[in-house]
Length: 353
Image (cartoon, rainbow, N blue to C red; front, top):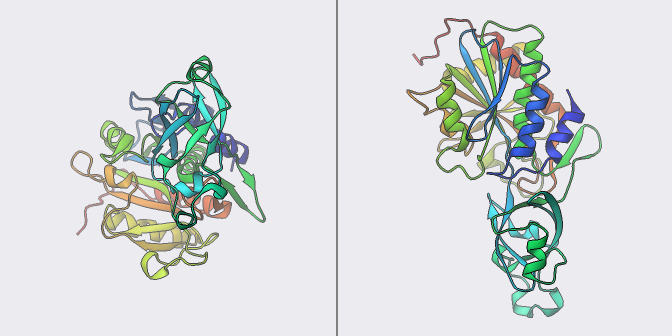
């Protein structure tokens, strides 16, 4: 595994709709081994191996992250923001941010009325994004403009990847830069001894805001794969106050999580289980009877339908600046994808019978 590459990928700021930086890092990483590397008009990056092979396999992980966007700049130079993706506003309070302005990055801090000035009966109420602002130190709207900042500029929380005890790492953007990393690393390992299949790893755009399917929908339509594997994150339930009866039992270091139901194709699921057990890859199973809330929901309905599997990495502290995962789970997911792809023959039939 290329841990330095993963760190560069996680540290690159790229909220939904503004994924250019991490996408560039991803494509540069692919150029050393992929047969073809490109990007489409939606911002999806694609790295292909054995493009003339059969069947055609799509490996998808979204590369965007949640963030904030400037909605208003007042006369005193304060910036007001809205969410890009699903935020818990309590996570944003007191954070530093990196604002992606025109031609430069600008640092700022999230402001809120001090607790001393909050009325006692309001102190227990949760903060809302519209009650917060970003302070870059400017004193006027003109000074903000001089820094190249405009309404609509995005920002991310100013944190970087850190190594914790054992094989654990924490970072913002693990949801779902880690999925984009896994599919590319799986492609890298498959390139060492290419299988009969044609494989396209895709770093999809706009999943966090893609209520209509985001970049996964357009890239799946263009690639027209015979089968697809989506890699995302899911809730690790090995922390206090998580209800296992609702989410299942998935722990950090326990292996990847395989989805059943909804967008997860039953034949693909069974093939993933067989590959995992043959390779000694630990895994758990997650029931998702309604929707996965991942790129799988868009891909499995593309064209006449795509048999789709969903592999998830257990993740603590979702949608925070310190999402936490185990690198062992990442390695196991990469290995599982490779084993699955190598089991596919040119004439594989995935029709449920």
